[in-house]
Image (cartoon, rainbow, N blue to C red; front, side):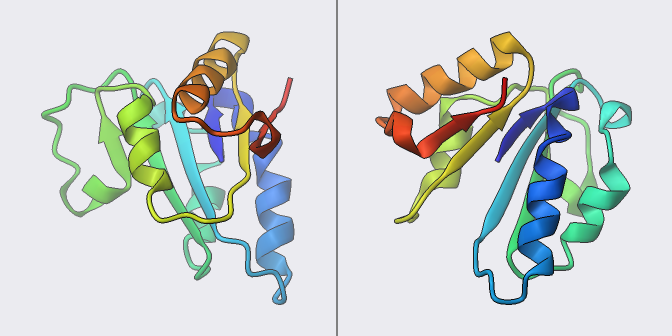
Length: 130
């Protein structure tokens, strides 16, 4: 899942549906982009999902200097950058089955779709919330 700002809204019920179904073995990785840590919507709820074996998240903060120290949270926060080709590529390594859900502003969605196309991800594997 790749979300920007309020684009997290449609992701939450999907995440809950998967996590609450003990028979569902879908692995979820959320890349969630915001300007600052304070802009992260539903952070407490998203962080609570991390207690499930099949959920992980990474917050991307575009307006924080990259030298900001998040201590042990460095795996959770990427600061001072946007979601880009290298970040997405690193998340897709070793995946054999894939479905990518994208939601954000119109420009955000188009940027992410362009990156996914550059990575030769089939359009059939990408769902964009409009």
